[in-house]
View (cartoon, rainbow, N blue to C red):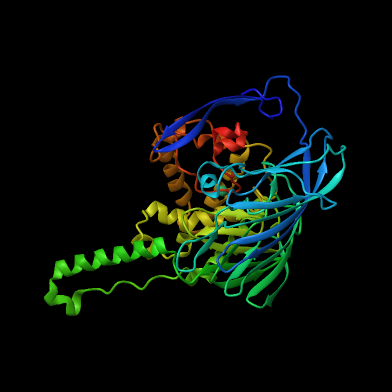
Length: 471
Ligand SMILES: [Zn+2]
């Protein structure tokens, strides 16, 4: 592909099938030497989002985006928006309806398989350079998934509202969210107020400073708070485990019971069989985790400057990944469990240490490294990941076994680099340079990365803006 509209105008790649999945492997992508750097055509100045989450978790939302034309040469705007959300209308400042393209010609079912998470809007004419204007979007759909036992998560994490472009541009936000009364909801930014309205709760938030992305999390949470210095920390977790994890613990307990009755025989059940341990609740860990997170903030401030927000909300997310939003963390359920339960769920010693000692604190470090210092291209994103992880390791090292944790983790990482990831054809260190960023998620390494400060909406190809028909 040769396209002068792209930042990296030359791209060579191939569709490749591996492990039953289709990948678009990028062989090379680069700028043409001597070509001028194209300025960005539009900037989003402010997002105003109003979203209602109904009792079946579907969204009905309107978003108004204040934009500024920078170049005065373009009249098509590309937004990220989850394919699971259907646009009802896009209107301009005078209420005129504007043409848009969103997985045109596909049914909802086709979209989920081969659609993309983009929305293109066409303006009636090219706005002059520096001209400001507002677009209004109305859309509906379901981006909140239920992991069982009332554990919910936002599946389309960055694309639950129309977000301009692919880059880490900073904008201000205000939002109003309405959600079922039985749930608690937390979001990026400062909460202005919250009240009840019939079967719903309604809350309003506003950013303290420009942010590159806005998000929220919700659930039947228990919570605990720690206040210290200029900031406060609130930790939220579900009282119940997500279904997948509950089942894994239950099957482990059943195995253990079978094993012990075999060993001692049915006659000895009266004194030898240990009853299965009670199901752990992620909510048990709240206060302790809050204190540890506060202590990591103090540690990081020495290296990175004052904590950038007034409040940090730490919330549980089912599965194995984490994400550090501005003022809001998603932390894996595993990080809320005691090591005994982690072990029963089948985690290795290294995985237990990963979830307990690193994951929450890596996400805390992203408050500076990612949400204050962002990146200008996919080639730089690894720097924020590396600094966040390095700081988390230094913090872990201060807590226990001085000079032990860092040493052990560096040896593990070295081992991971020379070994093969599951499903990969080459050693991790041979797949490509770190600066290739999301392009490393190719058919050579089908595994997803564990932490995302901000992820591309579909596959790695989106980061280099491939011809969309190839997805
Ligand atoms: Zn990270």
